[in-house]
Length: 231
Ligand SMILES: *[C@@H]1O[C@H](CO)[C@@H](O)[C@H](O)[C@H]1NC(C)=O
Image (cartoon, rainbow, N blue to C red; front, side, top):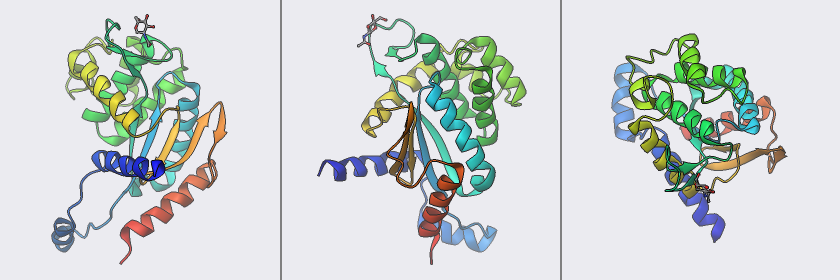
């Protein structure tokens, strides 16, 4: 019973993350553009300053190199709403700098095309976990990922100076940690493929029935993609 309702919540939440596809619309688009695929929603539950998240995102960088056209990947952040937190209203396990990193990544995810924000996240991770969330890291990584901080909307969302404390971004973080909790995600990093939790990285790999190598995730994604696009 508990599992059922949890899965239901998961699928609700992942439906909210993936683009909503109206079958009729897809059909009529097909005739015009030839596009017909339904992408597999992938959600990674993370904390931007968490070593397990950095590892997980690096594994998924390899996964994306093979199946990026078949997936719709998003990050969702773990944190605790806390009215006593002055800057964010959220307590982040690895401190306020992690909250700032979460805001920067949420804003990038909202306002930049996938390739740009994913490269931005990879760049942040590459600087090392203690650098994630610093304004100078965000601005440097925006530049290296060719993400236009000032004009894309990312900067306005996360703070033009890069501090992760602008109003919109902070609101995004507060809302997002609630969504994450409702999805039943507690550990960074939690991997959800097409609404199903398939793996957790928390110090070590846990509950990864289908494996945790890039090839294992690729296989599971291919399976889900076939199911979603059969007939
Ligand atoms: C809420 O935030 C305050 C201020 O940072 C902190 O002292 C307290 O431990 C936090 N509470 C929780 C439950 O994280």
